[in-house]
Structure formats: C-alpha cells, structure tokens
Image (cartoon, rainbow, N blue to C red; front, side, top):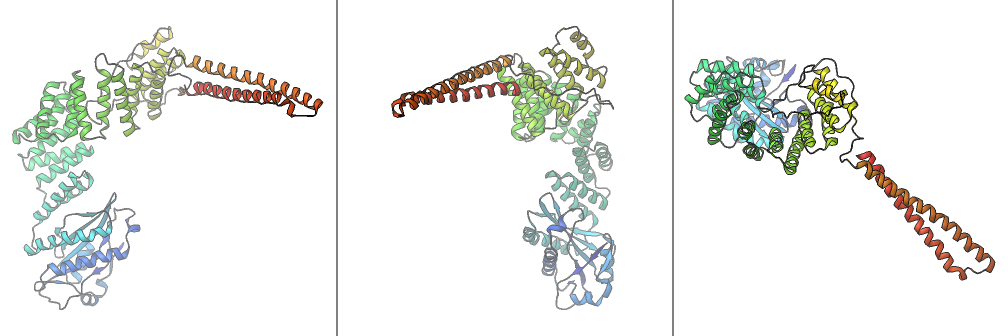
Length: 582
C-alpha cells in the first residue's frame, strides 16, 4: 500500500470552467531496489514543486488551472488515500475534480538516475503524453535536464489541446524504446515497445523492434512471434523479415534463407539482412557465398565488429588463416573486449601451416587474453593447452586441462587431452585414469578406446585432433554429460617439469650447496683450533698484542665459514625451489 500525496502550486484564482491539472508528488520506482535509501523526502518534494512550477509557467492561466492548496483542503479525505496501482491516481483525480493528473517517477538504472513525467486523463484513464526519459549521474543533475525536457511535453499537449491521440503516445514509447535499444539497454527497450503496442496494437514497427531486442537477449521463440506479427501487420517491413531470418539462424534452422532474400529485395541497403544470410550460408558450409554477403554487409556498415569476426571465421574454415587473422584484428580494434575474436585469432595463429614458435607464442598470448576477459570459459583453457603441447610444454598444457576440468567436472574433451598429454610424458597411470574417465562421461567419445588400449600396451599416445573454433559467437562445443561424476582424478600436476632437465638442475644446485656447507664446517673447525692456539700463547706470555696476526687468522676463518654457510643455504633453497615450482 502506498500513500498518494497531491502536491500543488498556489495560484491566484480558480476557474471551474478551465481545464484543471493536478501534480502528484514524485515517487520512487518500485523496481529501483535500494533507491529509497539514496533519496530523501526533500528530494522528491523538490522535483514535485519544480514540475508544478513548470506546469504553471507553460499552461496559459486563461485556459488551465494548476490546482491550489485550498482546492485540496476542501476535498477532505480525497486528498490522502491509501491505494495500489495507477488507478488510484485516476480515482483521486476524479474526486478532486481534476481533468488531468501529472505523475513523475524517479528510478535508477545501474549508476544512472532517471526521471519520467506522464500525464493521464482522469475521464478514461488513458495516458495522453510522456516526456523523453531524463537521466543524470546524480539526483541534483536531474533538475536542470528536467527544466529543458518537461516544458517540451507540456507545449506539445497544449498544441493538441490536451486531446492527443493514443497513437501519438505509442509513437513516443516507440521512440523511447529505440533510444534504449541503441544504448544496449534491451530490457527497458522491450518495456517501452510493449507499452507502444498496448496503446497501438497494430504498430508493426514496435513488434519488429521488440523482436530484435528479444533476439539479442536469446529469447528467439518470443522474437519469432513478434516478427511474425509484424509481417502480418505490414508485409513490406524489411526489418521484420531480416529479424525473422536472424531468429531462425539462432535456433539452428538453416532452411529459412527466403526471409533474408525477401528483406534484401525490400531494402537492398539493409546490411543486417546480408549479415544474417551470410551466417546461414556459413552454417551450410558455403563459405564463399557467406564471405560475399559479409563483404556487402561491411561495405554498407563497416563499424560492426561481429561482421569482421564472422568473415574471419569463414576464412579460417577455408584454412586461409592470414586473411582470418586480418579480420580478427579489425574485430578486436572495433571491440577490444571481444573474447571470441581473441580466441579465434589464437586458433588461426596456431593453425598457420608450418607455424613457428613466434606464431605459437602469439596464439598463447591471444588465448591468455581471452581467458583474462572471461576466466570461466573452460574451452579456452583446453585450446591454450593444445598450443602448449605444440611447444612440447606438457607441464603447462596439463595445468590448463586441469583448470578446465575444475570449471566443468564432466568435461570429456579436457580429460581426453589431459590423458594424451600424460601419455606423451610417459605417465601411464594418469593417462589411463583420464581416458577411463572420458569413457565414463561418453562411452563413444572420439577414439578414446583405441588410444587407451595402445597406452595399456605401452604404445605412445597419438596426437590429439585439432578442433575448429566455434562457428557462431557464444556457441560452445557441446559435451556429453552424465548425472554421475567421473572417477576421482588427482588434479595435482606440480611434480611435472616445464623442461626435461629440471631434476638434474635441482640436483646440481643441491650438490653445490652441500659443497659450500661442507667447506663451512671445515672452516668452523679451523676457527676453533686457531682460537685455542691463540688463547694458549696469550696465556703463557700475558700479552695479547704479540699475537695479533694469530687472532686475524681466527677472524679470517670465521668470515670464510659464514660466507660458506650463506652460499650453501642459497644453493640449497634454489634446489628446493626447482623441486617445488617445476
């Protein structure tokens, strides 16, 4: 329940024949969780008084009255009333004799404060007008913006004699939806389009754009429903055909190319239609036609990173990796946080024919950046592990496969690749355990049974087959999962060395350390003997100064002993470090 307070500006005179307007106290959007703690009653009253002042300034006094304190006081209990929903505003407006209610709502999206102002007709409850959404970094900055935007709403309503049509209000919501769509705020855009459709059920463009917003969110079934309705209402709406084509591509239907063709016929400059048709051709394996469509899409709009990325994938599938890398470079330039572009470029670097160490290092760098941007993507760890294997760095490869398994405990591909890596290192026990885990997850996974038999027979494990990168952004390689977890595998890989001679390096450091310590012990014995010798001579003569040279020999032996101990400790520590770290 909420208490509605009608705020007003005191004006001289009250004409009952004039149009009467009541300004409702500004309130907080219930969806803005936590905003109540940031705003005070004084903030809301300030906004309300300012809207009242703007209304009094814009609406001519001869035709409109902003209802006064006296008017409300005379209405008794009608002024303050507990109620739910918007209807209570209309009911109160009728009781106090207001023709229109001005309502303002303060909200917050992420770190941005928002304010919307709406006017309702109390006779039929219709929304007659709304301002563009006002946003600002703080509540104080809303007021100056409100002073600019709210008068525009009032002037438009005055021009229409407050007799605006529902269709015009639908246009306002549609326009607002487009603004949110352009900012990437698709949930709010959907809400605005929905309101536009409620006010004008035959608004084909609103259905089409709402379908696009749902499609971006991954709600392809709802998107298809909206596109179908848009096409029914307006069979010549190119965007609706292009959107329906895209939704079908997202759902994996590769036989709906006619929608993209129709969109291009209706609007030959609609670059998204070429883009989505290119995706369809790509899914069918017709990479040349796909590249042709992506070329046209880029010609029409070269600012979209996804198009370069998709064309790069087509080149990669054709094994033209130099061209693929060029397109992935452009995609990353346009969107430096494009995870899949880094990953796919890393794949192309690794797959270049006769790829050298420099290209493998570039590949690892790209996969590392993809992992940095999205550390929960298990697939990227496996790909980077494969590149490490290409460099015969089995330690780091196994470490990456282990990380992938931590993220997805039933990840067959990660167990498979780690099992092969263990096999190459000669760790038959771990290799067998991993490959048996693969078969628990998926009894028919690749050639696991074959490889397992070879390893058990002491044969070396074959190279793992390379996998192509995902064809579409956001699509992950499917893995067959089972309800039961695989057999427990020891994930520790600390005893494996990144270079083959690490054991001998550690042993050499330990030997050197032992040599220094042994020499220190020898010097310690020398210190004792020389000190005893010095004390004996000094006691006999009674003069220390005669034996200064003897005492210096004691000090020299001490220094040599201490230095030997320190160096021995350093070399011992280095040897232990090699053992632990590698």
